[in-house]
Length: 349
Image 1: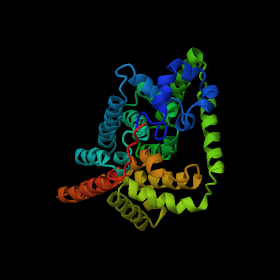
Image 2: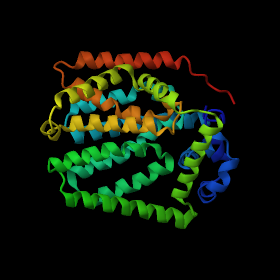
Image 3: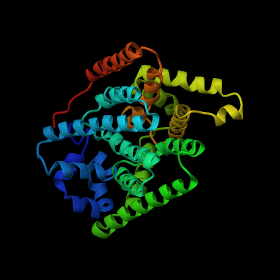
Image 4: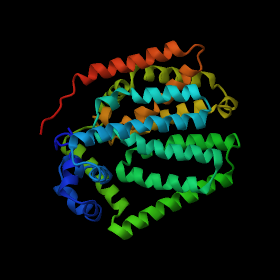
């Protein structure tokens, strides 16, 4: 699968071009690259350039992808522990991340690595909420640059960042000055990374991003993919890929939030858990109606499926003797994965 241009062409592109060449000539090279490589940001090819430093075996690279993707479980554990201050809930999120069906189904495709870069941004954000150190804001800005270089789609999860910031401001965990310092230093770090890549490699991140966005729009037109049908089909596909019990719990928790919110006073007293749930719902709705991804969301929305494990973990952790329910949810995800993995067609190049 790593070698195949039918499944993913990042390996062959990395074997054919150097990292410097990919960065300095990306827009010029992209039309001549195989399908997936020319339709994605160069960060995915660059990841294989990094792998080349350790091995030339595509099989070994496949295992490296699985290891790298699995590191996201540690990041999610750290994020949940810092945001919600609940070790049990963080452990549940850690475990459910490992078992996300759509992620297991698409190993070793690089979409399974995308959540790691997104969660790295979340992790630095969570650290800043605790210590308000400027160096953390700089790390957030640098990780944001790396995220866009690899895959810009998770930027849509910025709605969750905004929701958490609003809650932190309301609870006086952050002052307005702290938020200004966070935003200014994050953008400064991002700008420094942009200037360094432009100065060293003549790489224009925003130019590459616009090229990829135009390509995505053209793909939908060429393939004749309409818009309306995917509102339902994407929802069904995502519901299954993120995990049936996880989405059932999310729907219940979302309904419960709205049922309990009858006045503006109730709205003002929302907990962080409620803010996270509604922010995640907003993220999903905006992404759904944005219409960029028309089909294939089991693979393309893996990063979003990862975040949906958090509300489920919150719900389970709040139940007395939660071990039985946690085992039931985790076992159901595992069974989903085992059923779907039998349908994976491994390509022999």
